[in-house]
Length: 233
Image (cartoon, rainbow, N blue to C red; front, side, top):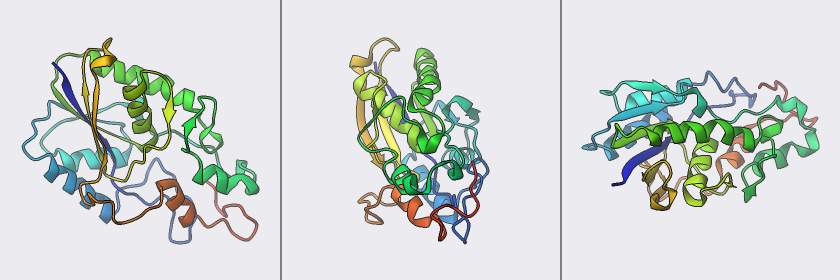
């Protein structure tokens, strides 16, 4: 009997201030839009009985989970935190745009570093054991996991291929839901990916045709010298 995994990306946040300068991504809260996206997901899941609710533990996932499932306790799984980049100043200015807009293009090699920081392989090293631990626990039937764009891509890629093969073109809109039915821990053949990037507040994806990384690049003020004026980790 398959069990149901609702894999969600947190709602919208602002990674740059009004001047286009990066802020610490570990501390950003949801924006007004992000909270509305979480409420829309709650309405979409109305009537679904969740046995467990899991979040990465970063404020943006905790706030999303609290809005989506206000009656449920939230488990914090730090292994599901977002992939981390280096300081933007460590990336040569001429390579910065390419690093942003092509961060998740195509099949991304395991040795590629996200914005000069953590590798895709390093992401798999912590996300896949967490996924396997969750699936091995047979005490639940339906679970909500609120995580991040790269984390969700890793899970979806593994669910489809059964390998550490990162399919970067899985776009993950803020507040989106993915639906995966899972079998046993050792029975990937019975897994079914039922839905990807369902945006409850914008089902037809009318708001944009840009990827998230393209949108972030458009928001970043790189200054006249081609480097961000106030780089952050």
